[in-house]
Structure formats: structure tokens, C-alpha cells
Image 1 (cartoon, rainbow, N blue to C red):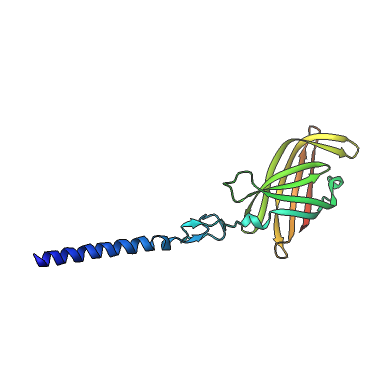
Image 2: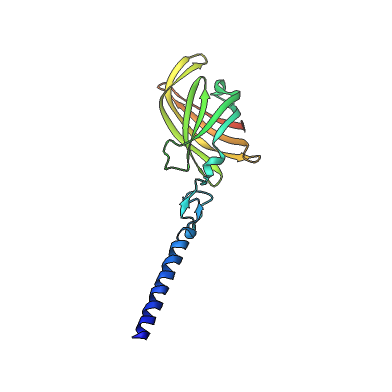
Length: 185
């Protein structure tokens, strides 16, 4: 009987010790970090998201004092001190999409783009955009199509890109290959 009591006592003490150890180590297994696999700093070992996630698009987000130059048919929209703004997508789940806001002739043209492998790729169409101050014509309405790309340089402070801009009007299509060079503000 004494052996059973001793074994039972040993069993209870062992169970108690394991219980205490598991309670004490419960919080030690938590690792803080970025838990989003889409981020550039994803931590596969993280169990608690600490809000530190960074995305490739973040390098582009901001305001840029820019030279926007269209050398041919859209030369009238060229501007050597234009503030171009790049915002995150309105879709919070989409961590690659951005909105490129270019104020052209007093009209905010907001083109969607995606960021991957260090390049912002622009491909969007805006319907029924009113474009004022067109030389010899006045105000026109048309669909604006923007296609192109941009990259960052100079420690992510300089935006460099080309955008093929097409304005489709009932009379004709206006097409120009515009360049953007902007300094982060």
C-alpha cells in the first residue's frame, strides 16, 4: 500500500509540475512580428501581428514635386512644377495597388496601378473625363487611358516614369508619351 501511495504522490507532483511549467511558458511561445505573407517583412514565426508590416507599394506612396512632360499632341498639359500624389488603393486588402493622382489642366486624373518587383505599372481607363483648355477647341469630353510604368531611385526619393496617355474623343484620339520625374516632398 505504501508503494501505491508513493507512486500516487509522485504522479500528482509530476502532474502539478508539468501544469505549472505549461502555464508559465504559455506566453513565452508568442512571437511578435508581421503576420501578412504579402508584406516584404513577413515573419513566418510571428504569432502576434505587431503592426510592422511593410509592402513594396509603400516605397511609392507620397507626394512628388514633378515635371510632367508630354512632347507632342498633349504638350498643352505639360507642367514643370506639378504635385503628383500616389495613394494606397481604396481596397485595403489589396496591398499591391496604388492610385496615381495627376492634376492635368485643372482636372484630377486618378489612374490605378500595381507595384511589383520595384516597378509601378499603370494601366487604367477613366470614362467621360472633362478636359478644359484644349488649344483651338476649348473644353472636350473623352475617355482617358493611361498605360506605363515608373520606378524609384535616389533612396526612394525620385520617381521616374513614362505614361502613354490616350484621350478618346468623339472626333479623334489624342495620344502622347508623357514622362514623369518627381522629387518626394
